[in-house]
Amino acid sequence: MKQKWQESRNYRRFKDENGEVVRRVITVDGQDVEVSEEVFLAYSQAERRERYIEEAERDKVVSLNKLLEEKVALEKYTRDRVETVEEILLQQEEKSEVDRLKRLLPEVMAELNDEDRKLICSIFFEGVSVREYAKQYGWCHQTVPYKRDRALAKLKKLFLEKI
Image (cartoon, rainbow, N blue to C red):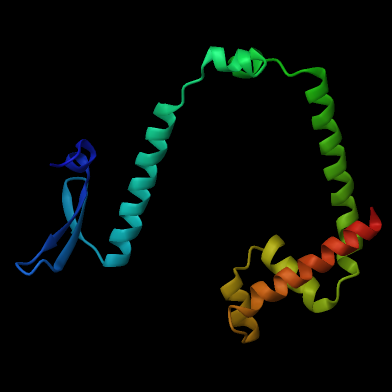
């Protein structure tokens, strides 16, 4: 017996008499479009994830009794919640700390060697993908994450020394 979601889905596999998949179809704007297995799997997984999230949201119920037992402030669940002075101060402290670290970044980056600095700048500031970067230098694409992680560890160490 089909479940309710199965009746409304817009993707399906067609099998031959031996039970082997011969076609994968996704219906888009009333048109059936035949797709590859990779596209079919990506689409069906995304649809399942969306259905899961919707079901999880429906199942979220906040029990007033449970909140009172756990001494949770009800203000956390109201729509027009006003931030407390402590929350505002913590946010300001976090922002000032982030600003301080941003100002420190050029100084710390200057202490990296040229290769590490170029890698960090390309991947994080210029938006170059790992594969593109590997291709530029003729490296295996698996080399770049290794070098990136090593450079980030150096960067973290340098930050910690400055703080």
